[in-house]
Length: 349
Length: 267
Picture 1: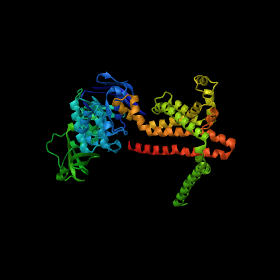
Picture 2 (picture 1 turned 120 degrees about the vertical axis):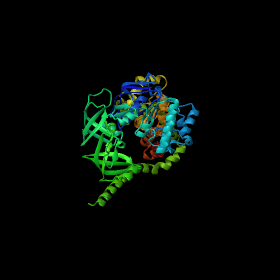
Picture 3 (picture 1 turned 30 degrees about the vertical axis):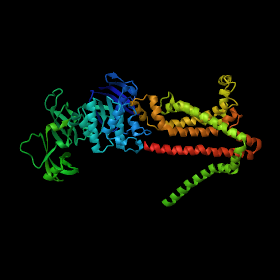
Picture 4 (picture 1 turned 180 degrees about the horizontal axis):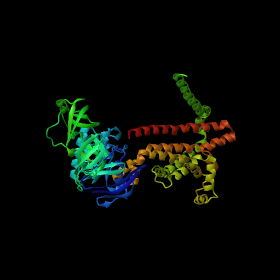
């Protein structure tokens, strides 16, 4: 169990301010946020590398806020692996453990057993990250802090390592707090997502909640939502406390019906590109509450995926479709199309 | 003026300036070695006083360096990691002897450790007289050269990212165990080159030593003594041998610095 209450910490002139969250034993927490939002500072403060200037850190029901690093019994893996360059791979892996059999088993599970005896200087960035991960895991940590530890791995290896680590975490019941920029990683691994902005927590929830219902326009943009509009949100009925309501949005030349827990006033409408359905003509009867006429401005391909930019009035709406949909329906600049979006796919925040 | 002419003038200025400075540095040393080098090396075999003086210089400089390494490394660590209360003030105090004229340093040492001082009296009582003794030589060397060691050691330790230590501590080390197992080995080449610089500076010290301990004579004092007593020719061999011996730490230093740069690139 990791409990962080009102935690503040300083890294140079940067201030991590009043961060609170709870991560259950055996859970996998994901820390998201733009560069400079305080993700690494948060991990380092929990590990004791940085001093907390306010608040509490409770690990395994014990307040460790003033404990030195070595007494907190957490392992940390940085993006820059911090392997000890004067030691070999073997010596690094065995640095903090007497359990050589387990260390050897881990080395084999993560595919670094072939690197044993090699000097650190001869390893690639990805190999260094794997060795650093094995070194941290070899201590049987029950709390593991990961700061973008897979960033240097190729996509295929990253998926394998992620899978291995998830398996190991389930076997051991280890609690993980993981900083990542990879949303696929967040969605696959995370039980809880913590979004930081400028040193403050701006949203906490399951990864699905955070991705589907970002707390603000900036969170939505950071999380890669293709369509984020600023405007005014209007209620048509009395707010139902704590529940999602149907709301109306107008802004940036577009009017939408959406859902959210907004009290009304200035806000944002967030629509994922994959939730926008394109057609040549309006359907006679549809459940979609938002049906918009537009003209295709641009079609950009990314492998088998295409991003179709549509001009709707004075604004641009992006739909994400497959390449085959573009080919079959002949989407090309200048083509008049109809974009349909269900109200529940328009998140108002 | 065209760009090409400007470039040529600038190149000539840079190369010319470098040549003038190199000549200013190399000319006196070259003249000394050329005139006295061979005689010096020849005399080294038969000149007992010169042999004893060189041995005394080497022993005193080595002892002073070892003391500085033992006491200065912890100080350099504390300064490098900002763990020293009033670190800026302490850092300035440590470097102060570098700015004091060396005879003044000798006078200060005489005041602090001379027979009339409480410390000097206490040391003399246990048979460790500072004035006119090898202890005085070592003390003078330590005073003028240890700041060089602490300063370079501090930079060397500061170059080792503190996160290496943090990671070692998450792997179970206490702070000081992490320093011993990780920080010091990573700063090792820098610390060695700092020690070599200090040793070389200690060997060449004259001003502070001559005030504290004229006899027994270290090599620099012997060279001065022969110059004043018997003239330039008699002092040349001693001076030339000192210059030739200075090449040894210089070469060691170059090699250490090259290896360190190579190692740091691999981190």
